[in-house]
Length: 113
Length: 114
Image 1 (cartoon, chains in turn yellow, blue):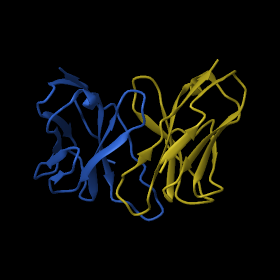
Image 2 (tube, rainbow over the protein chains, first blue to last red; image 1 turned 90 degrees about the horizontal axis):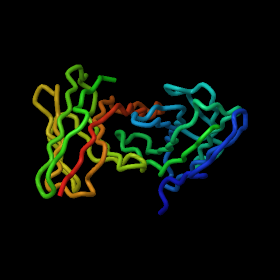
Image 3 (cartoon, one colour; image 1 turned 90 degrees about the vertical axis):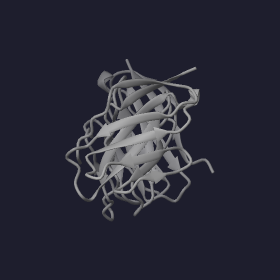
Image 4 (cartoon, each protein chain N blue to C red; image 1 turned 180 degrees about the vertical axis):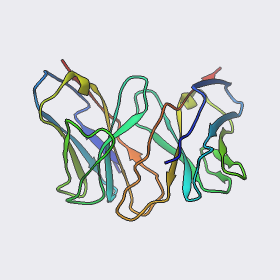
């Protein structure tokens, strides 16, 4: 049981480049989330999904797009990367109806030069 | 969601109990108290949650005051591996199809010393 898996774990981009972060969970969870964490700070919610084919904006959605074509996968896209998007990105999932017991991936460290 | 206040840092001795306080004086009746921790560079890990009653699991105990305005997470026998940032979060009970959009603030940086 792998839990929540994020790929890639590290990536360096140049300003203006695009990329996609993949989050995969094998727990059949309905809910999935993307957070970002800047140095010395807590986590901020970017986008989330409450089911296959649905997405919604979180606290800091600008500059990001997401898709949930399959229940087990949640993709986070950066269409034109900016240095302000340098951060560690965490994906999480949990089961509908359960009280806030999120399972997190190990994170993806993104640097935009 | 109600705001929480935690001390920015604290030290504790290995083998002793660690008591982590959290203030949530504006908590609403339907809001739960959650605790997570984040060991350096890893994703946050769920520890425990509660509504009114005290709770205990294999990792920790959660003590919630009768007026629910504050709580304490207790790590009964702290080890060096418990060194982490601990987040206290207040969030309502889940509404179907709304997700559990937890807010992670600054947390308490706990250093367990030998």
